[in-house]
Image (tube, rainbow, N blue to C red; front, top):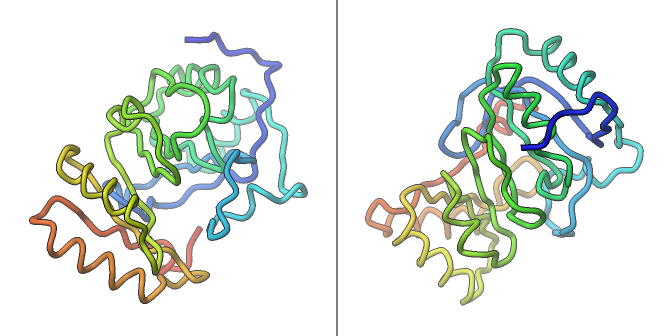
Length: 211
């Protein structure tokens, strides 16, 4: 693992404390470290801040650690998200520093970018395109975003992983802060007929109107 450098700069668009609103760790308090930028350009992305040039903030490792301690001194868990954390080449340096600070580290990624770094306690892969089987199998959790229309390829991929991975979630696409009604209907039907192999992710932070 790369050694941290105090001069290394990372580009973030947000750093805040809240609860996890999705998937396995729903309700768990975490500090969210959101990277700026993503190699994908999903039209339905519900995190537009990472595309806003005005939101791009340069922070050193030391300043990131200090801000995490300021906003969440009693929160041991940090989630790396985005944007796309795997698009950050120097990510292993930051992971090394966070682990030395005693943090539980989770990461949510589309799977697009560099190799998955060592040192994570939890990995969520939320694929927006077909990615390598190797990356999918490294995930502790798979989360598929489902829209009001599903393609044959998406159905085949989800059904495949429902049979081969122990922790697969479906999350309906949102219209703002409200789940799309048709997408929710599709997800519910899919989950209820999956013989327990699929679970529904509901983004509870949006219902609570918190970050």
